[in-house]
Image (cartoon, rainbow, N blue to C red; front, side, top):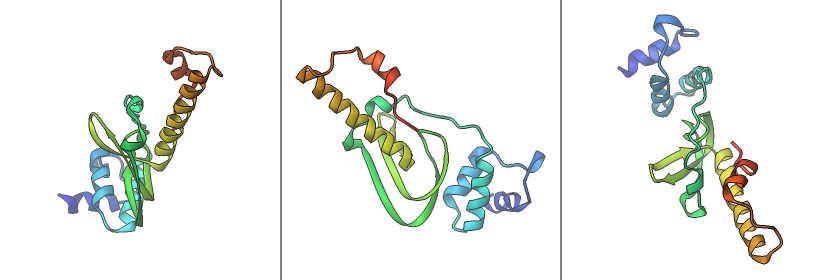
Length: 145
């Protein structure tokens, strides 16, 4: 139950048989209203390895990236970079897999990547830049995050 999860979280540096799984910590992070519980969940989530999901970056367009500024601090796991975040800006990325929550850094990186691609296509059309296969460019110009 949620109460037993929170009790386990409040023990100092819950390790060994009392440690929480990543899924349990994410649940606490997204559901708790207490700042101290959220901070403890964030601290323990940072110990886990990052799991990135950058396979949908090619789907990024300005119309499927959305930023929302909130009046309060919210904690979440970024779907794209796998990092745990506490911020008042939440970004949403709509992919073929559904709507995903991403951090502001990943959102800005994708928007910058979109802008670079648009400029590259325009410069190629004007003959300023020679046409280079897209596979080569993906290795050279990769979104940050």
